[in-house]
Image (tube, rainbow, N blue to C red):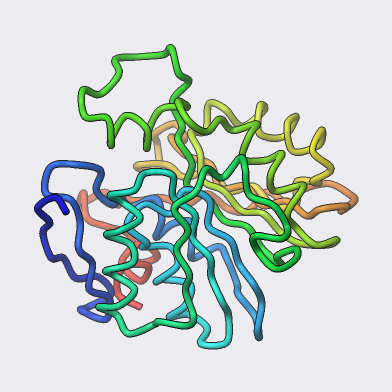
Length: 240
């Protein structure tokens, strides 16, 4: 196993081993998870779980849910399992080292209630490919495209199930079109801006399989205030 650092999140409530030089957690999973409301004994799938931060955040939010994380990169899957053990949530989180495109309902013991994903966001042939294979696969659509992820969401969700993703804001229209073609109706859109007067950099979109109507556009999320400090909402995301 590659060398890892040990990091703590939510005021020390989550312990996370991360590759020292490979793919590391950004702010995005925290933004995403604050827009997911797991209930009761729901079954949740995280597509592209990396080192397991999203399953850990969701399992901590609701002790009744079961989260399955699927990760194609063997080393990251091993680190994710190590993190599950370190945070003592065995039995509530399962990590699969699989290609998400090949998952079947049988693999998951039936449809899931919710799918979350912080998927690779750069088109395969756009920009400089990171020399680190681990970072490149996590950030570029090499092994998993946006369409792949949403098609699988349509296949693996129960009727009325929800998918929630975070993605570059510039690809919002693409998300909406692909969701519709996969039988998922966009339900909520929220743009994330670095500062109040900056253009949106990210968008959080949720959709409902077999849903209807028009999506709700939530108020924007601003990361930094005029003093270049985290806004109160962002501070809360990293402390509770």
